[in-house]
Structure formats: C-alpha cells, structure tokens
Image (cartoon, rainbow, N blue to C red; front, side, top):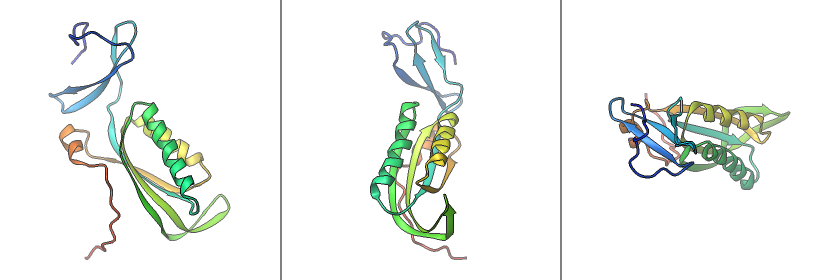
Length: 165
C-alpha cells in the first residue's frame, strides 16, 4: 500500500505523524509528512515491548528519574508508553554484584511501550550505561498484529501466587 500524492484528502500539515492501518496484513506503519510534501514510511513497524528494571534500593527519586529517562527516550523517537507500574523494593533471587557493590534487594518497575526495534535498542543501551541500574530485561509481546496488541493492557500487577506443578 503506497501513499500517493492524493493519499490524504485533507490538507497536509508539515511534521504531523499519522498511523496507517493496512487491513491486508493486520499491521500498522507510522507515516510522516515532510515539508516537501513527500510521504515516506518508517522501515519498521512498532512492536509492543515490556521492560522489567531493577534499580538499586534507596531513593524513589532515582527510580522515577530512570523511568522518566527511558520514557522520554521512547516518546522522543515516536513510541507510545502504555503503562508504568512500580513494584517496590523486593529481595533479589540471589545476591548480585554491580559496579563493585553487592545487592540483596532492588527496586522493581515495569514499563510497557510500543516502539520500533531501533528505539528499543537505544533504551537498552541507555539503561546499561546507567550506574544506578542493577538489572533489566526487555521482551517483545504479541505477534505484531493489531488485534493481538489491542488485547494487551498497560497495567502489570505484581503477582505473589506460586505455581503449582
């Protein structure tokens, strides 16, 4: 599906971003209007990611600052944040050494966001360089189809249930 000069019947506004839904592939693409009137599509579609991060315990302001840094990086690059959940300070499964310090507890938070893979790589690089981080992991959720992504919410409650075998 190509965007020709008459793709949008309404007047174009330079710098406006629109989401185009392609019903044939059940995917969506971010389309940018540039000042010269040409429309080009981003080479990758946005995917849903879940970031689970463990920050050194201590100040809640540090946790908020790290979440704000990651969130602003996502938003500046055209991503969407679905939700951020604070899981609080909990014990780590085993003692962890990071930056010559040993940690037994960590402050956990979870963030769900839609972004392309380049943004996700930037978030991972930024968090890996932050000395306040103990651990983090990021996983892709869903299969990229709109109906699947619509069913996944932004809230991630902490579950204390144990699995029974």
